Length: 234
Image (cartoon, rainbow, N blue to C red; front, side):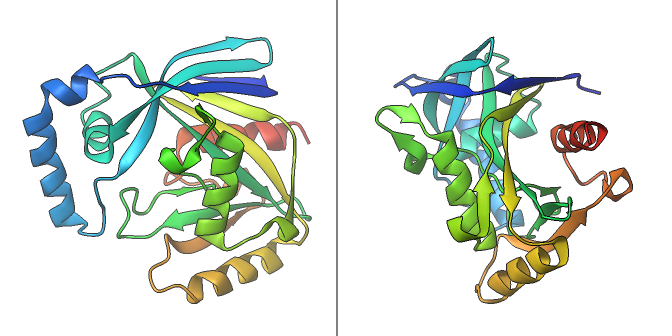
């Protein structure tokens, strides 16, 4: 099992730079074949542009790193082949939805997505829409993904300051607690109503986590580690 480290961070400094990724260049033909196979399995996935990180440094309550642009096909191959380039990490923001009665809200990814069946907080691999003034805007990414996946707006929640950065091998999940101004059953009903209005929602189901017994193997380890820590501190 991959060991995890959880850092409490108040500031993020994530510069975006034009960097050539040797893995993507050297294995282009293999990557293209791999992506073609994945598209046969899930025709809805597409080869957009994403941002990956390198050179992450935690100093006190500060995280700095450099991000670069890559195509989704290369990212998918890197992930599926066991992360062969150890200098690169997948660093993304997550909005940990916390209801007024103390439950965490997670979504189950729909079958047409690249992470079908996985259950976690609203999030996504950063892309070019998340770049602001030459830097990766993780707070903006969290708000964007939250709106796209659940339909919730700023009127529904309050964002806690600071980040829980969970380092799990080649991943860094930058988790921010999002306090919902409603209990769990109301939150679920509201999100499910939003999903029902979409032709092809990213989420297929909503899950409430009220205790450790609600955690499942379909939830990534960095998500369950965060939840375990949160419940232990109550």
